[in-house]
Length: 192
Image 1 (tube, rainbow, N blue to C red):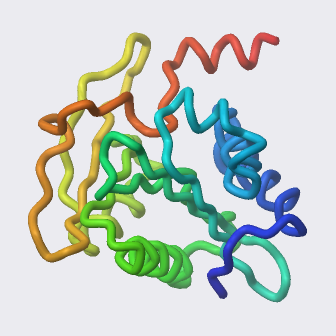
Image 2 (image 1 turned 90 degrees about the vertical axis):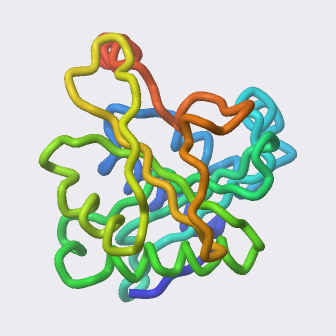
Image 3 (image 1 turned 180 degrees about the vertical axis):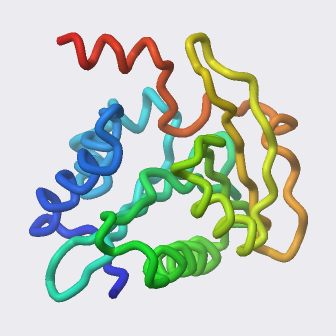
């Protein structure tokens, strides 16, 4: 498995992976396009307070098998959020997820970022990912559920500079969780 930046010729396949992995979400579609053409998607950046959006693909034999994105927010210039991270089921269980995560962490360090954050839930389908994050040194923090959520959401934070990062709940000028949508939004999306 190779880690490659998103290119125009892998955009469609990556969008298909995003729909497969995150069928209840929709932000990833615009985020993928915005990562390739920031000026054409200035509204996406401005409405979310973003400074940067980058995407990498996990490639195997010329096929996109997974993806990971980093969101950089204007209000927290030393931080990045890992978003839309995942692999097709057929690519899991062989260390590809760890390779993808390690590559993304390395890229964030090379950019000079000091903190990487991500969020996930305590649902059983994410248990292997939670263990992988913890093995990499990410520290969990529970958050307040949104209306309609029946699960607990965890924010994980990793110091990329060897320091223990401040808890996300104590960060000033923080926005909502990166890419998070309320369950009611999902219900409306499926009803349409």
